[in-house]
Length: 122
Image (tube, rainbow, N blue to C red; front, side):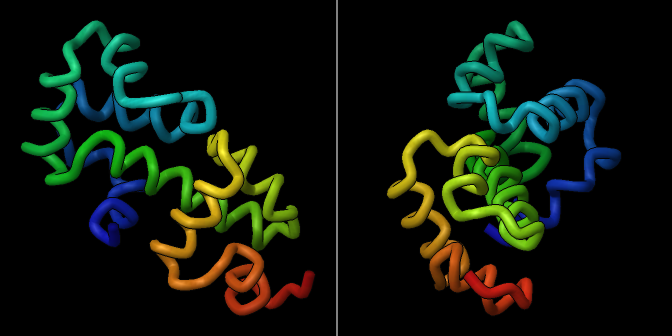
């Protein structure tokens, strides 16, 4: 997952087609339901999208999308938003899924992350 995290802001070191896709994901992450939506938006097959990500970034489109969403959730939490707001604003449709994904990635709940990493209580 760390590999994907370091790629979130680095879109200038990839080919132009992937650069456009990454910029789209970085701005529209909350409204993208799945990688199929991305493929359809750019008029390519899911297999082509998967190959593009794998060859240039060595991750799947979903891993990248998830990483962007998690980064946004962390920003939301540190900005004082509730866990539910961070979940919703980061594009997670299911609260319990968000909590379990967050715990798996960071080893703590979103509330614990906010308290320990952002210096906020609540």
